[in-house]
Image 1: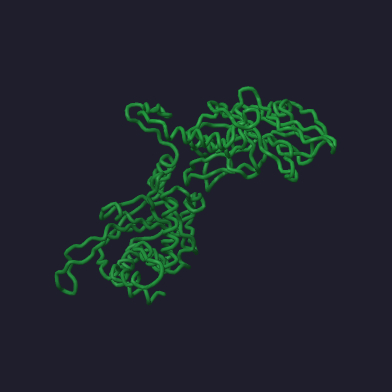
Image 2 (image 1 turned 45 degrees about the vertical axis):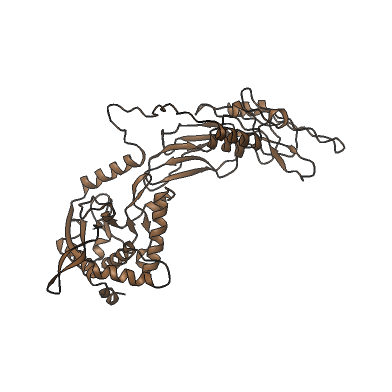
Length: 457
């Protein structure tokens, strides 16, 4: 007899307590495979697809788009058939979904629930036939299935018969159902060209083509899913997580900021020389990241964090360099692991990869957590300086403003030079101003005379 398994939302990252449903990837009544993604959720770290460890028929979904699900709360329930055993009838599937006993059917080779009989000459390959249409979330519904009876070897292969629940739209496979969902095609309005009105992929594609050819009319404004009163926007998802983290950082960390202007003309010249040679291009951010790793080797107390209870300081042996990046979901901080072990080119390649991931929201929670020091290039916004809030629980952050041509005294004469403002915010509990000022001065010296880095490499 089948077993209804309940899959709960797992812990998707460090310290996360919940996630917001972005969109469902499966419908209730759909047949899913083991480890198939069933829902896309937004956490405090990233947008991720959540795979279900059970294969079978989805009997219930919990939560609508925009709703927050707590870690450990039910996400979906799946009717899982035993590895060895009979196939299921529609009535048996309904009883399984309702938690009622299921009578055993005749002993035959066990197909996946929702699959039909073997096709001639296919060596036992099954044809997927029906998946239920969408139903309200959190309402268990019996899924479609076929009951197979043993047949004599001499008997002809039975015709394909589609049996579905009342009100269910029969579709050849979940892939066709997903195609219809993505293209905005109403399956209930289609006439299937398959056996007993089964909707095939070609039916959906014809509907998509007809929709594209039809004249378009202005759509009425859609009603907002969230209740917004008098300009009050609810804090949710990433924005809520950022607000909570920044509030905690401001509340717990006695942060101090110091800054200095630096002549970046030589650094920009070095970059042009490096990029004139064959090989990957080197960004300004990669050069600054390399300078930071060398500076942290000289001032290791800044690559640290204070314990949760405030009773000690954790000195980190590795530099996991976070950097602020603007993506579709807002500001995120991807992390370059073991940045101190990478060359400048390797830093540039990893920074580029993570930046692209931030832009298209494809980064995983693991790529957005675990940083020990942050590099914040707010010069891309066209500003010179900032007093940022530390990325809790990190103890330090280097900020970089825009690099702009300014009058500057160079070798005793007034000249136009490329100048940048560097700011350094640090947790005053981990060090005094001497260490912070020494760090910032070393960074500025490397920006002004990048050749001094050779003494450190």
